[in-house]
Amino acid sequence: MTAKRIGHATARAALAGNPSDLYGGAVLGIPVPTLRATVTTGVEGGSAPRILRAALLRAGYAGPVEWDSNIPRSVGLAGSSALVIAALRASGNAPDDRLALADLALSIERDDLGIVVGL
Image (cartoon, rainbow, N blue to C red; front, top):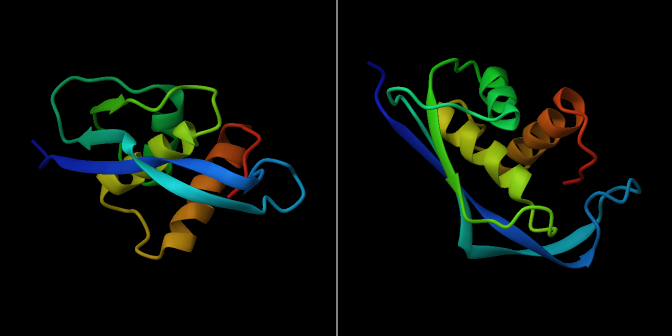
């Protein structure tokens, strides 16, 4: 059995700009620490939605996961990005550099899943 790893990521509220506007994704945002996604690897059983499978595949992790999120869906709080980042962190293979992590999450959502997103 692999050791458990837990990854977290908070929601993000955009104060100005739009990260998915297709014009560079310029945005001024703040974290919302009361809303977060959590992913745990190295568990028994568990299943993952497509977005988590894509992130974990990119990170080289193929085992079962558990996940939870209290970020409301489809309201612009970057819930899908939080799930991807939490999964990457839980995999143990997330980049330490925050910009590299954001670029990787962007690539997974945009290139692997076809989701229109921005940084």
